[in-house]
Amino acid sequence: MRLELYRLPMLVLLIWMLSPAASSQTADAKHEVTGESWLNHLKRPFNDTSMGKTGDLGPAASTPSEAKPQWSPTLSSQTTEKVTLRSADLYRLNCRGCHGESGSGSPPEIHSVINPVRATSAALVRERLKSSGMDISGADAAQMAKQAEDALLLRFQKGGEAMPSFAHLQPAEERQVIAYLNELAGVPGGHSAQASVSESPARVGELIVKSTCHICHDATGSNPDPQQILQGAIPPLSTLTNRTTEAEFIRKVTHGAPVLMGDPPIPARGRMPVFYYLTEDEAADVYLYLMLYPPRLSAETESAAVSSNGGQQGLVAASIAGGDLPTPPSPASESTDGVSLFFVLMLASVVSALLFGGLFITIHEFSRLSARRPASAAAGPNTENPVVQVASGERGMNQGARTYATANLRQAS
Image 1 (cartoon, rainbow, N blue to C red):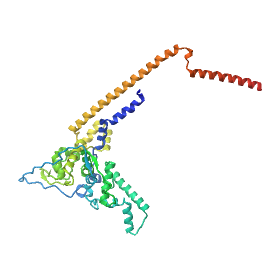
Image 2: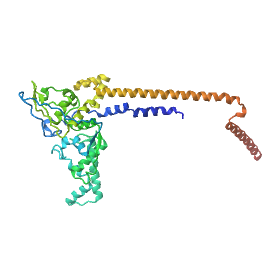
Image 3: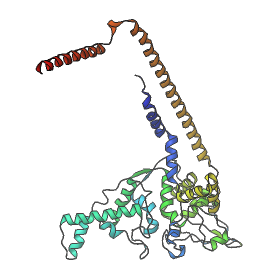
Image 4: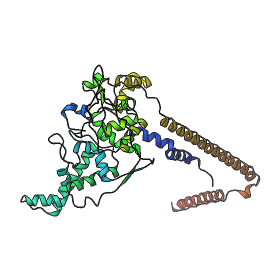
């Protein structure tokens, strides 16, 4: 079977889309956390909010005479490419930092999620209205519940006046968060709709960063000194892997640890809450995610920097303005680049082979057609194409018919 040349571009595009090089570049483009924190977006001081807080602070700083306890994380002994998350886990990683374990929030600043979720159940809507003296039909209750469900999904996608968007959730993740919310709200059948999803460790870290850490921490910015931290500065996410080792980071997140504050710097309790509901493995996933996908400026800021300052110089200027210098590639990213280069070279080899194959087929076809023409000419009139003969016969018959018709017209006149 010959390979049609017009299919070559489609085949090349398909090979590129299926290659790991293309998929890894696409994934990298959408995974980084970007932009300012949600508190900065709301112009809300850290001390005046309950967002992203658990109510627990870390241990007090030890005195110089006290021996510093040795601490090391207790991580899972088995490394795995996938982590199984239940509906309750997805709620815990994405919602608990603000709405708490029960979903009741912290009114009046953080509203409860219970009543909005209960409003998505036609049975509960009808029961509530009936208890208030309003008996509506099942169809009307179903319509009201559908409107409440649409409003809830829109809140996930677009956020609200004081709630950030959760558009980074995949559809399966969003469904399972809602399934657990139904259980918290007492919606009939809420537990039966729950299922598990399989995630990579980096994805687990991404969910925690975008749903909890980014509430208070900007994606990028300058690395504050102890005096600035004493004055209320919050280190941006882009500096955390430089400020701490993985073990120090895990301890800070899950157990709390003193931080240097003031001038001269001295150990202090600090203001960051302890996220006791996160496991040490999940805190390690956060560190992994920040290493694999370094936080960056928002896409709008980067575009403005490129257009105003020109190309790479604009990005460098924007990074300096934000306090971030280009981050040297980690060993993991260097390995990924090597794999990408391998598949690019392999793709180039396949494309070259296809092009040469198509050129060979084209030359072969031209040669075969050229060889048939002299043979046709040498065969003489008897080998004339039957279609040509029929056409010539038809032309003769038509001419005879016109002559006969002309003679009849003359006789008639």
